[in-house]
Image 1 (cartoon, rainbow, N blue to C red):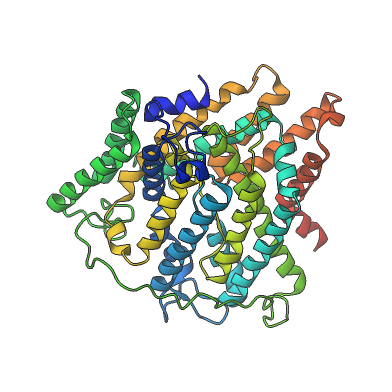
Image 2 (image 1 turned 180 degrees about the vertical axis):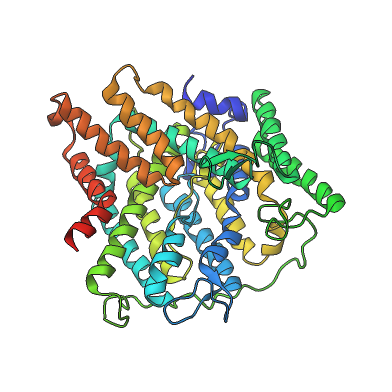
Length: 495
């Protein structure tokens, strides 16, 4: 089954618009979509990633006077202000991706990079200086995009690895859904992960998640248009009823509570956003000797780490989601990706400049694609909802994580089907593809999976005497990844 037919199994046969300026601008009919599918896709993408407005402040934000996420000077980024700029930047960059590049790839504060800032970088400098490094990272990424280097790397990736990246992303987002819902948890002193607690679903919210997966699966099999969106709405209503009866509260308060948002009537319906963090950035603070334990070399290492993560996380996500949306051409390339990569790079500049952390393409965009999104019109819907969220954040906190994570599992199942395009009978393809797919969820990083896949690909090609068939850029990237992965032992040997 082709990618487009596979998605039609989820959304129903596309009904092409009759024409008009919007249709022509976004090429909705040309891509076999419809206005309804684009709107539904935009809605689903928003609801599957709206958690970032709540989660990003938890990761990089803090409360003045409390020793949590403080920089070297003891200062913090206030929670409410981080939430406001998180929604602002996500809205702006998602709109730009839709209007400039015409892709249904939503953008928001990247998970992983925000943790890197809070845990590794900010403790060595001020928050404005740390965000300055993010801006520099974005400038480098944009330059690489404008010059065509990122596009060239994308086009140099073999078709088998592109399929593996798409499948790996599917496994990754499904794993995110399983973990965030509590269906999969860590263990103490035993295996790294387990089902629930001691092999049993431990909480009512996790049970609701499980029912949600089955519900969305049934709606998908029945080819119900809007299957994922309907599933999210139904499970949100169920969650509201359950919480009103059982009063479970938050998991931070008791073990049986909701993972993040507690479904229920919000304390307020809206308020004016505090955007005072916008522009609070020190572009070269990390390089000018202002901080005793940060030199030019360490600052450069921080920038290199940010660039490498941004570069390949976005490329991998756009490859996987673009393939699932059937947007790749006959050579396996994504037409117009150059514009998309430049916009994505700008997300780091804007995100750093607003102290929201680097913004990048979100893998949850695959949920919108599975709902039918094929063009930038879906991004317009998602982006506008993020801008509205600045004023109505309490309303969006009504939807619990357990109501949206089932969509990630269903979409992951659809994306893993990309393995059908990989010839596993040839081990020189099988091992790099397998490592790419497995490393992404197990290390919680798309970039790590891509790096391991690249390295193993060139090594096995060389072992077969086919090293000349490997694109030179693939060699360069594989060597850079090898150095990146071995930076710990290398620093020990040098030091």
